[in-house]
Length: 192
Ligand code: GRF
Image (tube, rainbow, N blue to C red; front, side, top):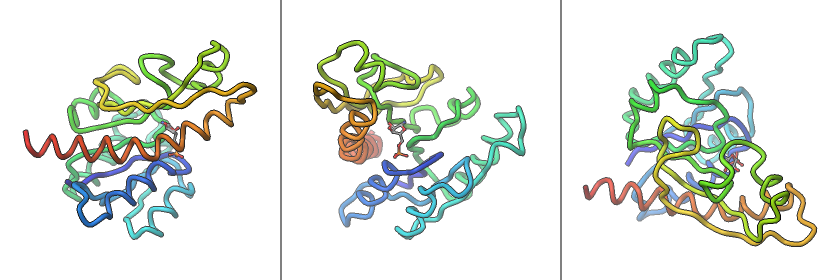
C-alpha cells in the first residue's frame, strides 16, 4: 500500500513510519512526505531515508484552506497514494479533504482518546492527576481527534513529571504504536 505522511515539524513519528515501511515484509511503503511548513527537520529526515519530501505552504492560499488541500491532494493523486498518515500535521482539515479520503486517512494523537482531544494534552493529564497517559491512532473523521480508534498505547505518569518529560515517554510509545497500527490497518484494508 502506497502511503503519504503529512507533517508540520520534527517528523519523529514520520521517521518511524518510514523505517517500518522499508522492512522487507512491510505491508506498506511511505512514498511521499508533505509538509505545510518549509525547512522543517522532518523533510530532511525523509530525504535522508530516500523518500520524496515536498513542501506545500498554506500561507500563499490565505484563508482558502480547501485550495491548499487541493494542491496537496493533486500531488497525492499523481503519486497513486492510497492511504494518508497524519503525523504532527498541525492544520485543521476541511470536510472536503476528509470526505475525499474517508476511511483512508489516519492520525496519531498524544492522549488516550476520548480523553484530551486538542492541544496541551500532557499538561492536562498531569493537571488532572491521572495515573497514566498515552497515545491513540484513529481514523480521521470530520470531528477533530474523533473517529474510530485503531490502537492505543499507555505509559505511566510519574511523580514530578513535567509536560516535556511525559511527552518524551509518550513519544517513545507513539513510535512503536503508529507503524504497528498502520500495518494492521492496511493489511485489513487489502483483505476487505
Ligand atoms: C506527536 O506527539 C503526535 O502525537 C502529535 O504531534 C506530535 C508529532 O511529533 N499529533 P513528531 O513530529 O512526530 O515528532
